[in-house]
Amino acid sequence: ATGPDPNLGGHAAADAVERFKLAVYGEDYVEPTPAAGTKRGASSAAGGAPKAPKVGLPSDIAGWKALASVDNGLDGLTGAQLGQFCAENGLKKSGPKKDQVERICEYLKSLDG
Image 1 (cartoon, rainbow, N blue to C red):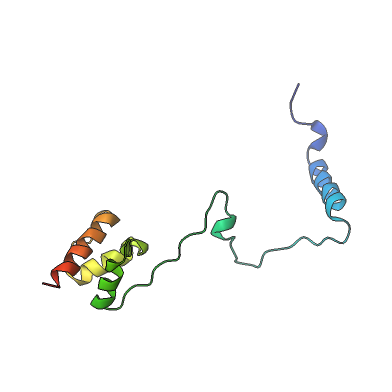
Image 2 (image 1 turned 135 degrees about the horizontal axis):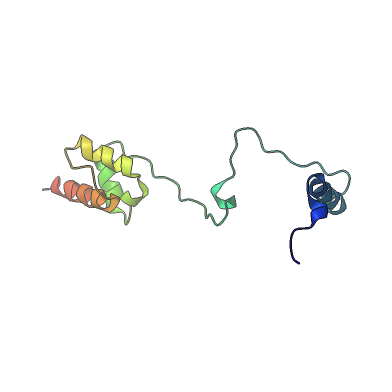
């Protein structure tokens, strides 16, 4: 039979873990405790890769044009940020993010004449 070891129920498992820690780390080991309210970073999450930094929101049309002129420049903005620009400039703000980016790029090009 390959069931769980009945000897490791209750406190026995915790005792086994403590004996393991003592054998591996020694008597002077102090287990680190995370600071209150901290979360582990994205890179330490299971399977997580570090997230790309969010792009700052341009403050004027020139900033939006500059960002849009860079390959995938607007892709670094959130859907909410793109929607805010659309709303402020009379553009439809709903729809997928790629549609918002396309709409904003077309609008910015129309400003050049």
